[in-house]
Amino acid sequence: MSHISHGVLSADQWQKLATYRVARFGTVDPRGRPQVIPICFAVDGIGIYSSLDEKPKRVQARDLGRVRNLLAHPDVTITVDDYSEDWSKLSYLMIHGMADLLDLDTELHGQAVSLLRSKYPQYQYMAIERRPVIRILPTSCYDWSAAPR
Image 1: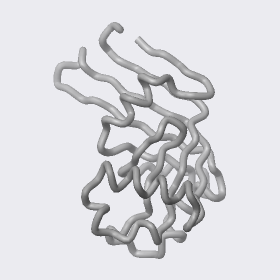
Image 2: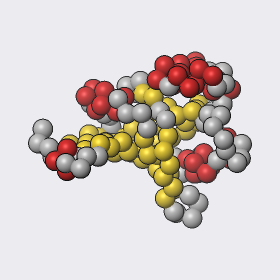
Image 3: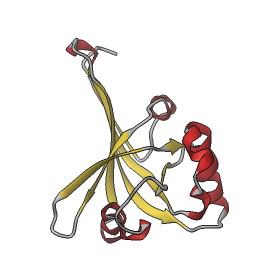
């Protein structure tokens, strides 16, 4: 069974999304190739937020492929899923949206940092308030489950 929501996620979909610890974040590079990476994220019923945190990276935060990609082409996708060997329990939530970077020292950036720190204890020890946060504003959602609803 599937359900497509246009414009916004339902309250149930926001609640479901909030339970996941990791999502797959998809962007498109300048050559049109998809790039999909795992991300930590938090939600507030309006947007999806992911910090460009202090985990080891080879380049500065704004030079990361996902950042360059979303700045050039802000259409992105977030996917969370449930896998089981019992395929009648398979499900996923795929959200298309528009992404941008939140400016540091703004109220919205501070709120996103608080959400992320509330969800992930590891962020208590990282200076994510001094790092960019990706914001995704959903434009549509595809909610699929093998089980009848």
